[in-house]
Image (tube, rainbow, N blue to C red):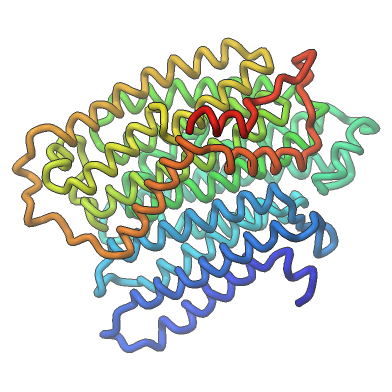
Length: 505
């Protein structure tokens, strides 16, 4: 096989899968079920996941005129995104019905969105990142409004599209400013060109523009206003994927740009990221306190979680990158899992919307109630769950870099978040509500059982044996060549992986 093709093999497999779905869907008999297209999408994603794992055995290198790079960092996020998409497809297969309209388009758009997200994590050319971002975004805009017969569906899609287009313009203009200051859009060359730039202020302004564009994509405050309406209007299986895979890709891009291209401008972009983290944690948690709609509450929760993840960005060290990468994995497992439960018990049409609607879920369906309770406990950050170690590592990275106040603000916000998570948890195990009778609970299909197994086991293993994922996250961070922080006299290493794994076991 062409060595260059191996560098983009997961994206090629997913592209071929999406095209096949689009070609086969129109020629199928009108009365035939389109769920077979979903299983084709699952097969393609599994092959892409296998190809991503195989890429880890390739020597780090670039392809296609040095625009794409495969290394431990890109492999880490490729595997994560493939896992998210695979689980989301399984949830979708459980939720949709055989007579659902446009199922082929739903699965194809999911696959094409994954192509854009994966390409973002391996691209080392800003213009290619922009193209990949658009591939991912356009798919997300359409998927957000897929429930077209509901007024909230088109509303969420339009808001997402308009605000997303505005944010994309900022990102593109930032690329133009960086090119004007350095004469290149290659991520690896920008840092080398910056010291000789005659217009460093323009480069700094370009970094700020790029932060705005990617800040919208990860729903970080103050660029978060689209999130609650979009989460409420989009189908729950789509929200589970949309809130994790594109965000993971955007965070990967942000890590690569800030830590590879602009480490010398750390003093300029670090305060911006600091305030984005504080605003995201505070606005997200305070906004979630007032919500009674479960999906809107989780939307504000995702804003807060973006803030926790940004805490890792503020530490210019291997610890900061590794903590951010590890937290991305834990958040993906928790969030995809909890939206899988919401998708199953509420259905494609979201029959259950408020906290009160989930009253007694633990009695009506012990499996679903128990799974949702477990994910809520992890989101709170209780020990022996992935959420605990995710927060522990990002706050530890901040403390190691001397950012004590940021860690304190994060801990206070974690305490605030516990209130609304516990409110939903209490409702799950309260006296059953008459609004959700037992006979209306849908039958659990094998695809949903497998999706729950993946998310529950992942969240649990990240909480009791985080060593392997943390090792992979640290290996990914070492590709940036960062050995310490400018804010510390000696770089204090994160807890030793083997020691930590031994302690928790």
